[in-house]
Image 1 (tube, rainbow, N blue to C red):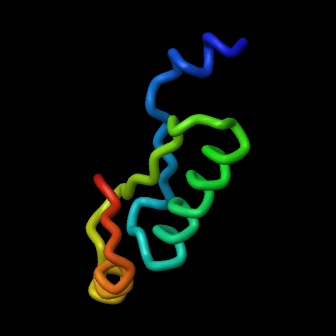
Image 2: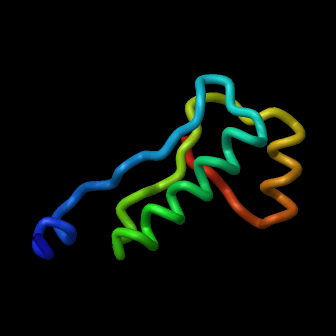
Length: 68
């Protein structure tokens, strides 16, 4: 089973099609939680659409970026 963890591909964690701050922050937190539980870095937060101004502001303050 340990070998499987190392070979697993990137698992994208996304919210919904028109991401708001809650959706983006939830994807970031859930990906982080799953990485800690699994002991891997396979879970990656992503976004499905364009960021609104509020979400962009929050991510800038936190110095974070969520890839599309």
